[in-house]
Image 1 (cartoon, rainbow, N blue to C red):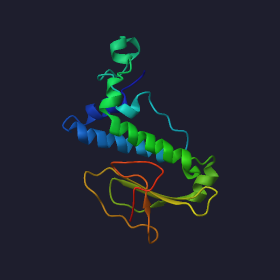
Image 2 (tube, rainbow, N blue to C red):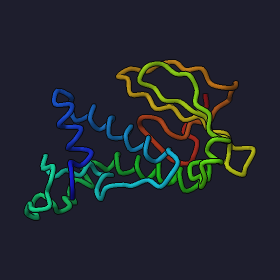
Image 3 (cartoon, rainbow, N blue to C red):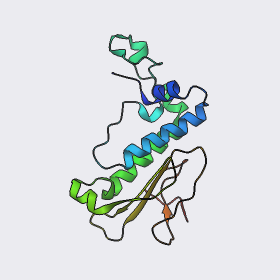
Image 4 (spheres, rainbow, N blue to C red):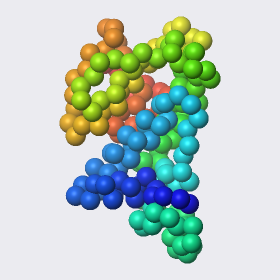
Length: 170
């Protein structure tokens, strides 16, 4: 109940951006969370861009502010599917759920990347055939990065879709 929802914070900090641009920002934020190590904390309704209409401290606000607006579930169906895909990815691959700092230090390597891009590789957690490349691009345009090895690479998540199944190969 405390502070802005992610959607409200994005509206507040990016007032000139369209809803489509804010949806992309929201997907990026959620993908950073769900591909990071540690226990992710998702705010109730985050998958459908929950709003409290800008109320940053709604503990004293009426139900009209704090209740779930379930109509948003249908309105943001693509974003819900994206979030489900990220959760599926995290559940399927233990590489996204390491349990110790020692494992993380051993198996995660950050890669040089352009401004506003975070990129790292993850060696499969217990499965030497798994190797993941995670790239989060906060720029408004695509950027080139150098992958740590030649492909082919199976893309599981992009800005439109997410999941544990191959979307395409590069």
